[in-house]
Length: 205
Ligand code: GRF
Image (cartoon, rainbow, N blue to C red):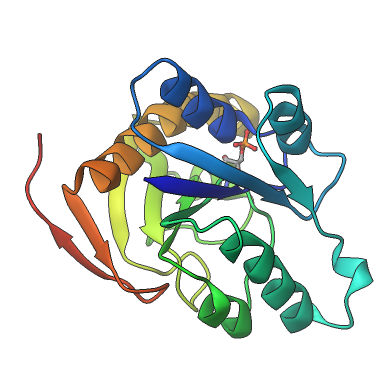
């Protein structure tokens, strides 16, 4: 499965995918890493490991749509079959989603539909949740609103702060993302069509 990754930040999910791939645990080819942040950890990791990486600056474009379409054109040139948003901290406009060459998934640090958007860990604690976690979902035009493909659950511990909870969730994000991409690569989760992919599950392992 040809996979392109979109990332803005530290890039630990990218690293997890890459490590699983190089260790033979994930049958994918990472065809490109794309970022809106040239100085991000994700871009540095990609360059250090010989992965094709490109950063596009939103400020070089007249508006959000123009950036998103240019980004998707660059992504499409790598002929991906799946786009993984792994800490891509921009909302992709309708025009960008329409320009996506293949289905797109995102990893989000909450048990969607709870807590779409930012600051999920602090919000989960403030809401008194006993359980929190991460979700991998299809990207569509609703922020963090596309169909959920898989989730990992983490019990909230008494007295922990948002960064402690974030760290525990992150350690579950990596195996969750790897398992979900593997299920797509194996055809156990089938995504057909473009970004508005239809999903069918062919059963679990
Ligand atoms: C993760 O928590 C992910 O769920 C969220 O952004 C963070 C990215 O972390 N969307 P990293 O850049 O993969 O380390």
